[in-house]
Length: 193
Length: 381
Image (cartoon, rainbow over all chains, first blue to last red; front, side):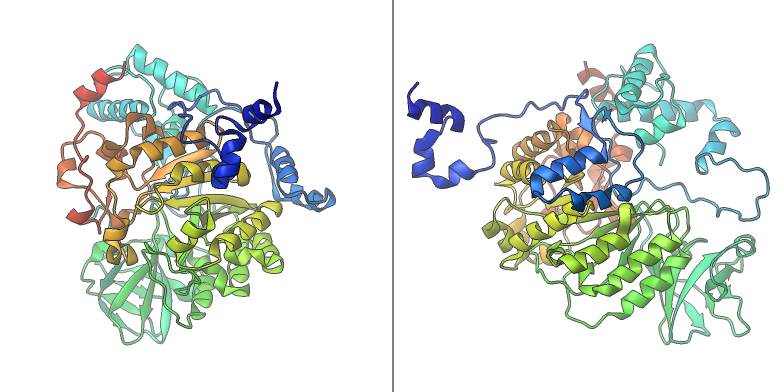
C-alpha cells in the first residue's frame, strides 16, 4: 500500500489532500456531516456509571498526575460501580416536583415510614374511581408512545400489550419489572410528579 | 394565558420595616416548623397573613390571593405594596437569583444584565435558605453570572449544604470564572457532589461562540473553566440554545462535546426563550424549529448513541419528529408556561413542553398542530 493510500485510510475520505488544502476540515471533530447517525439510540447501550471510570476518562483527558485524583473519590457517595443499562438515566434539572407536600412533622405523630412523598398514601388508601383509572392508563399509554414503546391503542385499558410495553420500559430503566403502573414507573414516565 | 401563577402580586402591607422575607404557613405548620420565628407568617384563613411578633407584619387585601400559598417564601418591602414570591412550594423549578451582573452579553439573553451593586442578594439568599422546605429536591441558582459574587457564592453554597443537605443544586454559569483555579476550588468544594454546574456552549470554535455571547475570548475561558471543573470532579451539564447562529454547527458542536468534554453528565439542547435580548434580536435569531430538525436530530443521536444523556428543552412535541420525542422534556417553569389555542384538543398536551408565555405570533412554528388518540394508536406499529 502506498503511503498516500495509508494516510487516506487513516484520515478518512478527505485524506491528506484535504489536510493540505483545507486545514479546517482535517481538524474538524468528526465527519458528522457525512456519516448519518442511526436515528435510534440503542436501548441496551452499556454506560459507565462508576465515578472511578469517569476519573479514568479524566486521566486521559487532562493528563493530571495520579495523586491529584485520590482526593476526588470522596466526592462521590456512589452506589456500587460497574455497568448500568440504558437511556435517559438523567432526570432533567427542572425538578420532578413532589406534589405540594405537607411539612415533615418533627414530632412524629405516628411511626411514619421513610417511603415516598405524598403520593404514596394516595395509591394505597384512596381508591381511584373507574374513570380515574382509565385516565391514568391513557396517560401511561401516551407516555409510553412518546418514549417509543408500543402499548397498543390509546384506550385506557390495561391490555396485555400495554403491560408488555410497561415491562419493557421497566427493564430498560432498571426498575422492578412488574408490568404494572407502580409508583416508581409512573414517576419515571413523568405521569406522576 | 399562563398555566401557572405569576410570582408577584400587590396587597396592603402593614408593619414592614426595611425588607422582610416571610415563610407563609398554616397555624398547624407554625407549631412544628423549624423556620426562624421572625420569618413565620401565618394565615388568618381569610386570605390574609401575619407574623407572630408583638408588632406584626400584616399582609391583606391581595390583588390575586392565589399567587401565594402556605409553604411559599415571599419578600415584602417598606413603602411598597409588592409581594414577590421567591420560593414556591411544589413548583416544577425554583431558583435563587444571584446577581444582575454578567461578564457576557449573549445575543439571546432572557435576563439582560445590569451593572449594579447587588451584593445584598448574597445576604438575601442566605436568609432565604433557612425558609426553604428541607425536602425540596432541586434548587437552581441563576443570574446574571453567579460566580461574579466570588466568595459570596461560596457562602451560599456552603449554607445550602448545611441547611438543605438533601437538595440538588443547579447553578447556571458561563464557567469563565473557573479558570481561576483557586476560586474554582472554593466553589466546587462548597458545592460538593450535590451541585451540578450548567455551562452554556454555543459552538465548536471561538469565533462563533464569542459572537453569540458578545465577549471576545469567552470560548477559551469557558473551556479552561470546564477543564478545571472536570479535573476537580464537579458535575457538569452543557446547555446549547438553539437559534439561527448556533444551528448550522450544531452537529459539529455535539461531536466536539463528546470528544473534548467526555466528562459531561448531561447535554440540554434548548429552544429559544422569547424574552429580553432575544426579542430585540428576533430577526437575527429566529429560525422555525421545523427548519432545524435535521441538525437537531444529528446532534441528539451523535450524543445519545455514545451514551451521553441528552435532553431537548422548550420545544413542543408536534414540531419534533417522533424519533426525538423520548428526549423532549417539560422544561418550562409553570409561571411562564402556556399552550397555543391550537393545543386545546391535543391529547399530548399534558406530556408536552408547550410554549413560553412570552412567545407571540412572531415566534410560532408552522408545524404546530394537534394529535388525536386515533393517530397515535395507529401509527405506532
